[in-house]
Length: 203
Ligand code: ZN
Image (cartoon, rainbow, N blue to C red; front, top):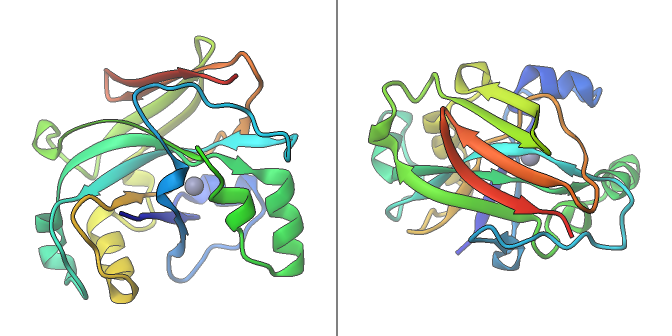
């Protein structure tokens, strides 16, 4: 399986990193070794002093597809969950400066913790889902899918132009504003609407 990620999909997050607003979605990948499941702890790597949390809604692809039309994209996922796109911001800034690929900063081991998944039919309107991240009991990131530049169906249409989607692939759909550094000892809890989806520690 593969993990596809969308960058710069929420205007306020683009602004907080002083990035340009893209004319098409920014796409990058993480390998399967980036996955972290079942509320396992995240072990802070020693190659970075600035690991940021990026809370994102994650789509689980339910059937194979290529060049999927926006109007059929909803047929390609049945469940959604939450994930953290952990980012070594110090490394990423250096790579970006030199125009180099981001993998070392974005695709390292355990850089993609994911929650359990729930049926999308649990949600009245997929274009209006609230989600948030609490760290040590304090709200640190809060988003709503209505703030996305590209919605779920548009993302599926776009990425499937380049990458065949396979059952079990995951798509991280971008982070809202509020990204910041995590520290050893932090406890991260993610919510989709009112439901707690994950809870794990930084070790
Ligand atoms: Zn991200």
